[in-house]
Image (cartoon, rainbow, N blue to C red):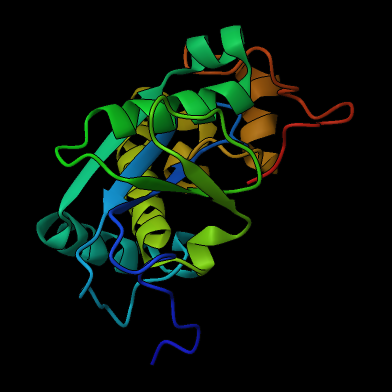
Length: 205
């Protein structure tokens, strides 16, 4: 049973798109974001903040969300663009790119977190820990996380020494030790404190 029931919408009868990102605190790879509009009667016992789910559960949920959503889309900002514009802007840009692709235009955006760059013509509400509160944000968190994981698994074949299959680019000891030993790859975010030898202000999930 889901002991943390998620809310289906913030305002009943309004077309709301939930938005969330994955990979903000990583040292390598892109940041992914998803936007999802769920039907008003959508219900799924398993759906929760993607960080509370196992990998198997996330991948089981993905086709259900894609099949049942009224609209969904994924946006990406690669590591070079992250280095140019900074990770916070990159997260919002990825969300905007996901919203751009939605086949249904939402009347309102529900954004996970406490900040957002407004999307032209669509009002928004930021919700701290929204992926554990709203169904549409939780669904977006599942899509963003699984599509990003797919990408990291692919590039892990190219650069197996960084343990990306396991850490997905996050700053684990193994990942940092590999950077010390082998240097960086074209996928590393050069604006980040890669070795962790100072205050890592951007190291958050």
